Length: 91
Image 1 (cartoon, rainbow, N blue to C red):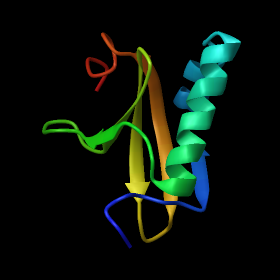
Image 2: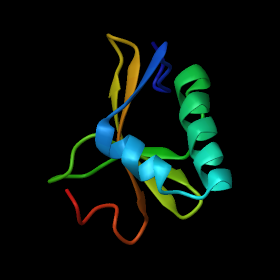
Image 3: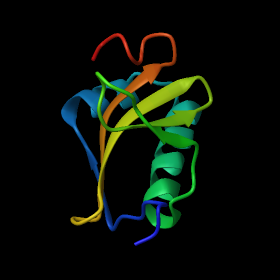
Image 4: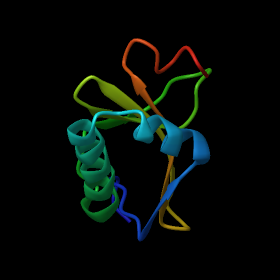
């Protein structure tokens, strides 16, 4: 598998679904599209988080998605959708 992640499945945790439900509809659509694009093609503005955080960050406009990539299980798990100024404080 290449360095770019691809996945056959996207998993949204309950906190991430609540975060998504609180977004304006156009932003929520862009967030879903960005996650699906990352899962299907490995494309997107994502990077590995540095210690003490773990996982990856996917950037969508002013929003940050905290995600986990499982290459063996071919899944992308979305843990949180936060504004960029709050995304890393919750962890």
